[in-house]
Length: 254
Image (tube, rainbow, N blue to C red):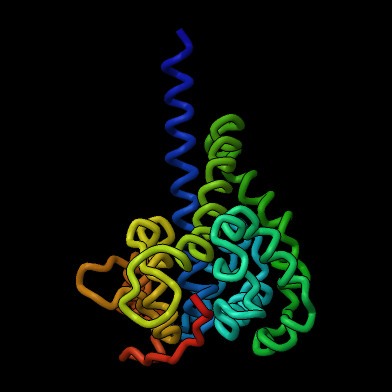
């Protein structure tokens, strides 16, 4: 008698959780990754603050830390010093332990000093954005108030697993499997790109990290680029480079 309503609750929770993850992935790739880490795109102040807030309540990520860890990853891609290389650690270990690997490097004051010197701590960071649990609590509270305690909490659980799993897969699976049109150890996985708003096109990204567009071929789909293009048409964003600038990437021994 109660099976059908419970199935509806579960289905609704999965749908909402996936929707929240989509918002988190778009905010992460467009704002944290392409915007802050690589300066490939700049946004008008209101858009920056919206993305900043969305990252805070959906992931709890501190932008300075994320940028520093990611820039170090590019500086030491798949060689000694890379914070999360599946070439050095094995892709399964990186997939399983991605959060721990990230947190360890994010707490390294030397990494922050060297790779995030252009992102100073602001008053808003001290009051709000550096308090991850506070932001995540606001996000969960919003889901509970809007959708009710059961659906809200289940949706939050679904979101956490999708986001952490997808983010780990970019560092682990997409550095081990996938197409390699360019000579670097990362791979292009379109299915992962669809989940992570473009991040699965990782071989393309490591070939041209300053490009705001991760899709280089007509058949590649980069949802994050659609968002950037829309903001550009609204004159709320501007890309730094309109052409691909390829870099030589150090390769670890096979």
